[in-house]
Length: 231
Length: 178
Image (cartoon, rainbow over all chains, first blue to last red; front, side, top):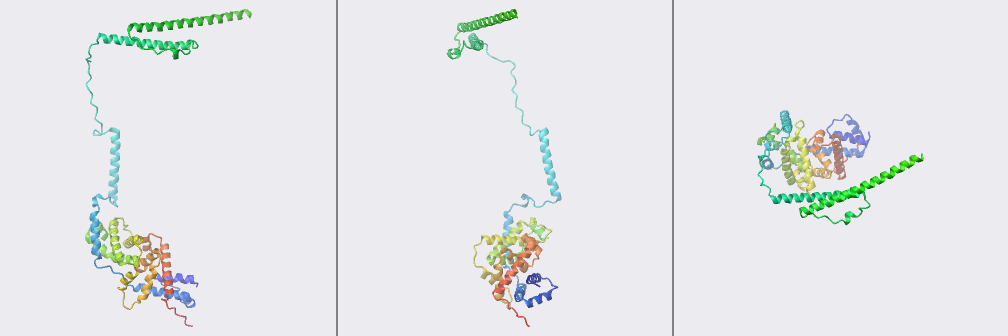
């Protein structure tokens, strides 16, 4: 037997085991001084530990513990406010059922709407069938007409500018920059004059466009006839 | 039955549980803390913890390892917080009072001093096994460690205690008779 094996058996003996190899232990201890010393230390320690009397608590410790436990339990929340640590089978079933019911209720409320969940409809004002507006005055009508004519003149002038820039862009370069901003007409006569000027410009532009077209057309037609003669 | 009664708030059941386990808890506290007053304080704290968390105890397992586990944890916390003081004399004075007159006081002191020098894990395993009488499996439950680990700790603890006894000349080596 080696010293390591001896120590293993010694530990088992300290665990309270009855060793079959007790003779081998004695034989090794007789031959090895260190192991014999270790065995005697183990025996002394074991005897001492076995004979040791338990440490007794002070007599009033029980009362002090109970006072503190009672105070602690009073300070804590009542049982009905605490989450149960362990629910029984019925408890768990009840929890699941309550959860399922709440989910179902939420789904139904979302699909169909519950009367107490619906938002109140806005109050509709009764429509007025007859509007009671004051009769238009003469001055107001004239003023509205003046504004309409003035805006028509402005619009036609703008359209004319666009048209001119398309038909003869070289001729009208810088027109937009050089032209003074138009002011709204101050009276019916002025508005009429503006409209006439605008229409006159449009007419002259149209006339020039037609002249340009016919000139180009006649030149092209003459060129074709000359080609046919050559062929 | 006692646990059920304590969970329902039955004061008699609570008192019975305290009386049943206070010696074990206090004894372990004295051994690990080596200070009687501290051991009394920690014992009270341990029972507060026990009754606060009694509903989490697994009733399929024995109660004592669970209580010893709480005690060890509270002692560890206390030791970590406590400023170390020379407590050994106090502890030895307390424990010597319970011994028989013919016990070798010097040997007791040496063993206690040797245990006090151990690592806390070794100390705990040693005290739970030799002082509290818990088997390996219950120590493993209390410390939440594998049984093999507990065995290793205990074997090393014993070897260190025995080595100290040898060094201090507490063992008379009998020379082999030829």
